[in-house]
Image (cartoon, rainbow, N blue to C red):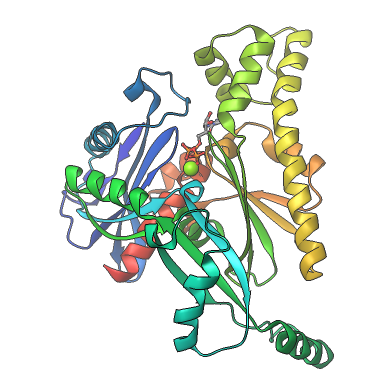
Length: 377
Ligand SMILES: Nc1ncnc2c1ncn2[C@@H]1O[C@H](COP(=O)(O)OP(=O)(O)OP(=O)(O)O)[C@@H](O)[C@H]1O
Ligand SMILES: [Mg+2]
């Protein structure tokens, strides 16, 4: 699926255009933006299923060799009429490590020494094989009462400082670099998909919220507070499993189960008998409820660790397009639920509004990448 807007905006000039590239486990997505007087204008977007590049159906999780990945991306860029060469590229959370470290309060110079040593405790491979980055999490002040501040200070003296550690395996980076080279894109940066998603899926609130990215192979959960990632969690359960369970229950091939899941989801349809409707719904919910159960566990554990309530959950990723998911999530989750609308950060022709809201969740990462690239292009 691809849609090019370049015709609507006068030719294919691409000065100042940037493209966000998100290669997921089942689908690759691109979003091209251009800046005009500080506004991010949507030039084109598109996605392509990766399954067929490994002789698998749409919706299947595949692990493609770099050459195949490059071929899929090249096809997508052609189909979507991507003209920009300046890219921002996401790295899957599952190929990276994000942790909050509790460290003694030392200056930036000493941190440079301490973090790599400390990182060894968290990283299951030699530190020399990964690229490390980190960020000191600012102390929570603005929202605390004086009494809380006092408490926080004593706590901080005892605890030191919190540092957000990020590590990407060098092999992963090299793979992505070679793919970008093959398709002729200049990757200005690579970032772990968390940071891209939070840029496009979040509003401006300070209160802790959770982003739940419902992908094909995994479900990713990020708790964000004051715009900063405070907790992450990876669940190896996603949309592919939802399709497989549905297929098994209804005795359908993967392709059919995938199609019916997307078309009707949890919403009953007159095409089916009542009994069938009920079975379809039950099959979908059996996997979804495991995902929601895990979300609730993470919400609870954050609440206990930081003594704070995460009151809002934003669903993103292709799985968030499941018809009826909001109602199901509201029933199961101990928080408010909404669906990410990443294209709301961009300007597009009004007639596309509904489509962009519908397919938006799957593009959160790609939009977030291009928004960042746009600022620095
Ligand atoms: N309308 C829909 N209803 C339900 N599920 C959908 C719909 N559209 C797409 N999906 C599911 O979303 C998943 C793909 O989403 P997405 O593109 O975010 O995953 P990905 O990035 O490839 O995977 P991952 O993030 O796990 O690597 C697939 O499992 C697909 O079946
Ligand atoms: Mg994804």
